[in-house]
Amino acid sequence: MRFLLLLAARSAWNRRLTLGMTLIAVALSVTLLLAVERVRLEARNSFAQSVSGTDLVVGARSSPVQLMLYAVFRIGEATNNIGWQSYRAIAGNPAVAWSIPLSLGDSHHGFPVLGTTAAYFEHFRYADSQALTLAAGKPFAELFDAVLGAEVAQRLGYRLGDSIVLNHGMGDVSLAEHADKPFKVVGILARTGTPVDRTVHVSLEAMEAIHLDWAGGAPLPGLSIPAEYVRKFDLTPKEITAVLVGLKSRAAVFKVQRQINNDTTEPLLAVLPGVALDQLWQVVGFAERTLLAVSAMVVAVGLAGLVAVVLASLGERRRELAILRSVGARPGEVFLLLSAEGLFITVLGALLGVALLALLTALLAPLAQAHFGLAFRARWVSADELRLLGAVVAVGLIASLAPGYRAYRLSLADGLTPRL
Amino acid sequence: MKHSPLLCCCLTAACLLPLPALAGKAGAHVHGTASLQVAIDGQTLTLNLETPLENLLGFEHAPRTDKQKAAVRAMSERLSQPGELFSPSPAAQCTSVSVALDSPVLKPARQPAGDDHADLDGEFVFRCAAPEALRTLDVGLFQHFPKLRSVDVQVAGPRGQSAARLSPQQRRLAW
Image 1: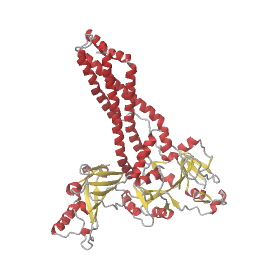
Image 2 (image 1 turned 90 degrees about the vertical axis):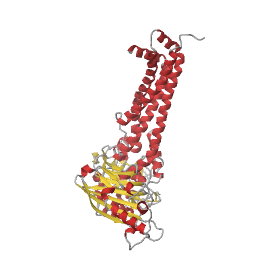
Image 3 (image 1 turned 135 degrees about the vertical axis):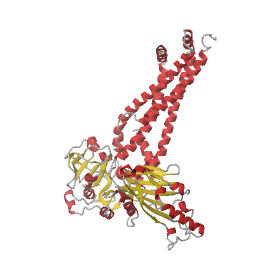
Image 4 (image 1 turned 180 degrees about the horizontal axis):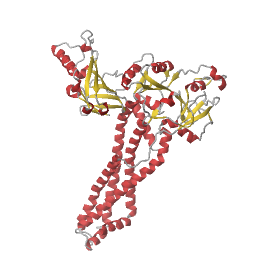
């Protein structure tokens, strides 16, 4: 038996080019299959990690998923702002324990700038009810203080005490700058693996102050209020983008949600973040299943190619098989030889696919972190992925039986009698 | 960047698609579907059901015939026994504490006019001796009200928030 396997290996090595190509096809298809599954799970995981302990997210009336995406994940833009009066009303609701106002819209080198209050550092939770911690410095206290997320500080190489200038609006190029009112970095947050990492945090008052002498999205010509005078103005914000709300009692969540959604003074929308995420997955689920089906088809194509290559090789290997038969190999052993070859390629392809996936994850994780603030952890193959791999190997095994059977039939009579 | 375009497409698509049971104010009135809000706080399990009357009765106007009046009575009795409609995990030892039903057809004084649609709101409160064992809720509405095809559920509990859609094939809610 061992002798037979050795023979199979040597014979395969002899045809390494064609088999190698097939191996690559199988490995790539397995990588694709696993990547689809992994992106699905990791995306869900990272999204779920990004908000914890918040009972309601409140914003302008739009779609709950859209509200979640811009308020928590900084993906997309708000359709509208909400008035400061509405925020005061929500914060003053007797059922509300704490509230964090969020004001978005400006950026710094492509990173979103978030105007908020000290409540953010006190009440915001991520992952498993973890509070934000500062890796260095302290929360903002002065008007033009800024606290950076870990990714912002690392990418742009900022340290405590550095001076930064915010851009008006979102985007990378040719944005108007708030150059007359630079901010001082007073704190850098510890890494969270959530969108917080790629956010620049300033106070709501500072957000208001840098826009004092602006109108219609541009600086007012001829009017410039120097940074040292802005404190003389009323810096109470007029509007904000969204509010994170924590309640005293969880059971009140649906009641408060109804109160806010039925508010007639301003069209507001309150969503339960966990519910909105599940609704997002319900919708995305269809696309995910389609992708999984497509990648399963790709694996099927890869395995079909494998069978084709092994079958095609039977022609050139007629002599080889005939010699094996003549020196005493039983037809059953020829069958095993051919089937083992297919199975071996499938298993090797699956292993190579896993290795390739690990490599890709390592290479692409920083990009996912940089663009979405989502942490894609490198990890070992999960039980679900093992099940997928098992299915691939099983299908590979069944497919390999075909060339084995054909060789078995042929080898009974063929090869020894040369047909010229 | 392999992940981002895919993720972006999915997310954009998600924003464009109409979502069921958008907000708490289930203002939408869709025959065949109902919304259920599940809140677990301490020992109290509160269920809020909001459904078009069509799902329960097959009509939404004030009962006119004796048959329709009987149907309203039967529905009211059925909903007053929440033990048959909602079965929380047995290990949690939940018992029904109160039921409050609110619907135009249950108030003879305020009849719904003409062809207007009408809803039924129900609040079902349970008290659970062992709330930590409360992990599932079997919803038996589908057996009793065959016109009901799906229930959009929102859960707020000690293990966080979640959403699910129940159907006659999928009657169990787990969190």
